[in-house]
Length: 431
Image (cartoon, rainbow, N blue to C red; front, side):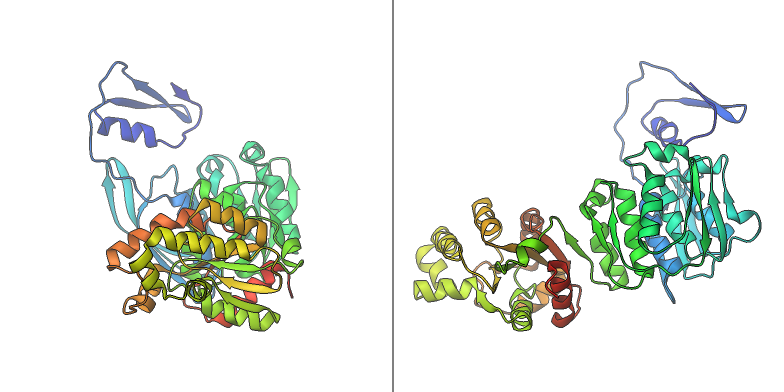
């Protein structure tokens, strides 16, 4: 096989680890690759390096954030993928590489990056030619970085971007302009003159994970709130992206899976779901007071209806009967308006319950870090399902797929209820 230009070589490095010789020889500007067929692959323990293309978004956030710094360990530094770091070097970013070694044929190392003053003076301002194939996946986040660079940054020879998950050139141009930025569009790229002041806006991801993640980083440097349509598409390559982003930046990151504002404005119940100790009741009471709504706690209603405490229901009637009582209580909420409802941690796990609740109101997952939940409930005695740290960690992981089906998600971190309530009201369009 002959490559007219050198491309990413992970397969060529991986196959010898499995016992298949690969011969790579120069062929003009590219390479000739020879593999002998009919070889049996041997089993090995293979360590996959951290993906630099995924790390690029957080690296960009650190470079652009005032006073920020970030360390990332065990990142793949393959020269065919590390062009993004080379671009940042050219722009004057403070980046260091340490502990570089080879793992299963791949160069791997640790990266440290700090907030930097970026400039495109000299040759740094034009990205074209062979470097484009090396940075093709990172061009959306490079465009965001370019808005904060002093000087002009031009990307050319990247027409391939129009054939990705979306027309990325068009999506980049559309997003930058939506945020009040200035960008010149070419058939094979774009040019941006910076630095520019960006403002929060509604961004269409076009179902493209890299567009969604790139403009999530743009939102960090923009004033105001940014809403990204179909932000969940980031999960295609990085399911934990928003969770990690919230943890690193301290920003409130919420995920909205459907247009729930029109329903919320009909004053249907706002239903808070999530694990025990997530803060549903505290947040719910604050939200209800702010909106002038009634606050309801599903577990309290169950206890009142059954005339027993929840531990007594579990002990005397069993969990199955508790779940039946819970389902009947949820059905009784039909027709309710102007109410905030905090659900028990297991109520949203049942598909039947989720269907009932979708018909009643809008649901928001209060996504609180497990360790914080545990610190709040570990010494409580009134929770019948409360067991060991390990058991509870396994239980929350089991329940997450159900919680993820809520209409919206709020990453709480350790932020105060009042701030989270403001974010919920914004999401629901109830200002």
